[in-house]
Amino acid sequence: MPQFWKIFLFLLFGGSLLTAQKRTDFELRMQNSFLKLYENPDVAIHSAQEIRTDKTETPVINILTKANLLKGDYVESVKIAFEKSHSEIGNEDLRKILILSREFYELNFYEQADKIISQYLEKKGKSRNSDKDQFLYAQLFQIQAQNFLALKKYENARKSLTQSSNSLKNKSAAPDLILKENQLISATILFEKGQKEEARKIADSLLKDLQKNPRNIYLYSLTQQLRGNLFFEEQNYEEAINCLKNALLPLENINYNPLKEKVYKDLSINYLVLKNNAEYELYRKKSEEVSKLLGEQKKEARREILQLNTESIAEKSESLRNKKRMQFFFLLGISFLLLLIAGYFYYREIQKAKNLAKQIKFFRSINIPVKTSKETITEKISSKKPLLIPKETEEEILAQLEIFENSKNYLDNKMSLATLSAQLGTNTKYLSEIINKYKDKNFNTYINELRIKHVIQLLSTDRTYLQYKISYIAEIGGFTSHSAFTNVFKSVTGFSPNEYLQNLRNSE
Image (cartoon, rainbow, N blue to C red):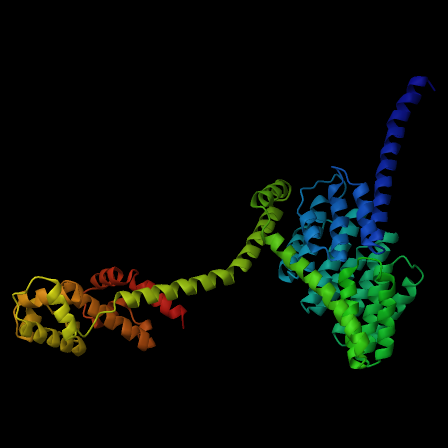
């Protein structure tokens, strides 16, 4: 064969073989990092970081976020999950959905996690072709099963778990771990449903299998913790303690803090039942220490999601929209939903306080004095020039005004200055001057405020008036038209009759 063709064939096939070898090497290292998750999350993080590049960020982020969740470092996991990332390996969108849904599930946003997963599966569930996608789908279905379990939707959890296991055709080491984890979740579902004997059989069988591979520390300890719960339900406390201590033994020097917290708590409960106060106090304190740390982490992580930079979310959503428009709108909706959930109760309390302040201000603004003492008259006289109206006449008119206010004759829509002057047996000039002087307002304002005060008292004391039309309430208050009542009401109180009625209805 001519030398030229040898060189050409080498470049054609030899170059392809080198590329395939390079990808295979990355995949092997990724699989090793995944296996490390179940052996030591800190080692998994170190292993994943060593192979992170601009083109392989998303698969590595999948490892890093899960490792931090297993450690209980929820804040770091959230930060990494929302980093800008890209991958040329496998299904980019599916992997991002897997990462996000896991974050929401671990932070107890079960409803949001359910929406993220179900809406994605509705659109993309029929396109699972490659083995790589099958492995990602298996993990996504597993998270969905755990989420359903948290929501106590046991039948849905069982179906999702079956779909997770059915997605694993390639029986390599990594899928085998997912299958074992599915067995454990299946046993937990049975335990939650009260089928303890069936749960025990699965847990015991799984434990024997896991004991053959001592590197699967996480699943081994989790299985022992479940067996401890089963023995506790049977009131076999000594055997429960034995299982829990076996669960705890390999965890001592590994940062599986959420799992440790569960084991510490279960041990303290068993020792409490056995009245072993020393051991109870020991594990209670350990449980509370870890629980406090995890609680602060989880609280901060939930806040971190709500406080994510808006521009960063928009950029990420824009990138996803260019590839998958449906995914963009869904993620944006989830972000707004979380913000609304966080702000709803705060806004509601603020509105209540504002409404109360408005009502207090209003009642103070219409606090019309109904009595004017002789001392007040003397003070008014002494502070101004002598009046042309005799003092005795002033006192008589003020006394008659008090009777007028109590009689509610001001509700007569034909009431005028001349009409009232005639009723009080005085002239319009005297009456107008005394109202201006002692009521600090003109006649029309004086009458209108009396009417508005009467309307407010009716609305506050008899809730049936809240169902009436504004026009009817205006008529009861002595106003000749809806519009006149509305204008006067707003000028006196600062808000419309409709606004005031709505505030009263909301306060019921």
